[in-house]
Image 1 (cartoon, rainbow, N blue to C red):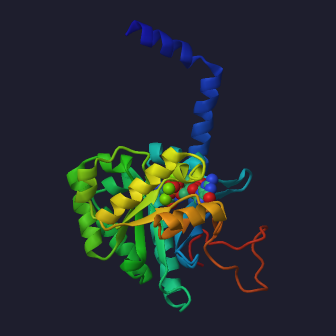
Image 2: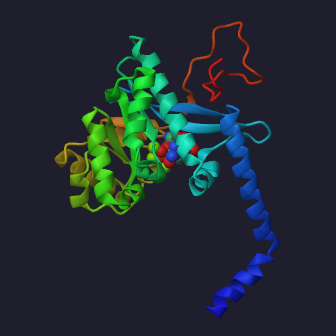
Image 3: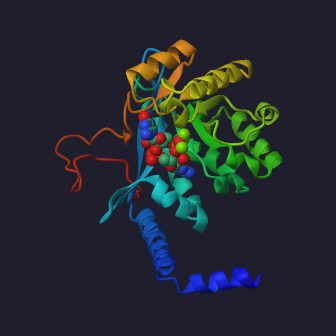
Length: 291
Ligand code: C2E
Ligand code: MG
Ligand code: MG
Ligand code: MG
């Protein structure tokens, strides 16, 4: 104990650590203001079928910081999770995603598309989570069958019974669930069967070296077989080349996502010509309150 305390005492005066603490506090404050001031926006990345036709998108959060520029989620979601800010942010993402779905529904070329939203563990642990999703759908007038929720395996480790109950309530509305980054976590197979999942997303680390590493190829094959016997869809994440697409297709994979098909980009088409967006080359869905 004294050793640990001593180490902490030293660390307390460690300037590098102090700098990190200050940095995190700054980020936290700026993120709170960013949410308030409409600096968050939703990008989307296409998910395609075996013919490379778009059948949906994954919503990916971005923060357009006035000074730092576009901040990727890896840099602010961990802070948002630690501080609880992920709750209002996650709510905003859900509502925004539902609005996008409602707009797509009015466009024959997009009416069948699904939109997948990433969830944090803290969101799912909120007692009123099911209600808040229902409200977001209702407020936008979106079809629940077009909404997908992406969960990670680690997220499922908390309070399994409660998680299953919430997932089943949402699945009852028609919402679909995908297990994200599959293969990197600890799911036991019997456990997978108990969850109302419709989709597994093969983590991109297995796709990256698929053509050169027989172990990765074997893992991908195993996931595809597993999904088939559990009657789930599979999305291969991180498909960057035509060769990866071909090999995955030959292995029996039916859905794909990755730079080969499209990078994450603003979910909204640019505003009508003449309305110049503020300072940037594109117009995006912002978190600004409606005028
Ligand atoms: P994810 O859910 O696994 O999302 C896929 C990530 O892979 C995205 O990173 C995407 O840009 C990237 N990606 C897609 N295709 C390729 C490819 O071909 N090659 C490579 N190298 N990367 C590819 P992004 O947008 O930086 O998001 C990172 C993570 O942040 C997401 O991983 C997700 O866990 C989290 N995230 C994003 N948006 C949200 C959100 O609204 N809420 C929560 N809770 N988490 C989010
Ligand atoms: Mg995801
Ligand atoms: Mg993923
Ligand atoms: Mg990931």
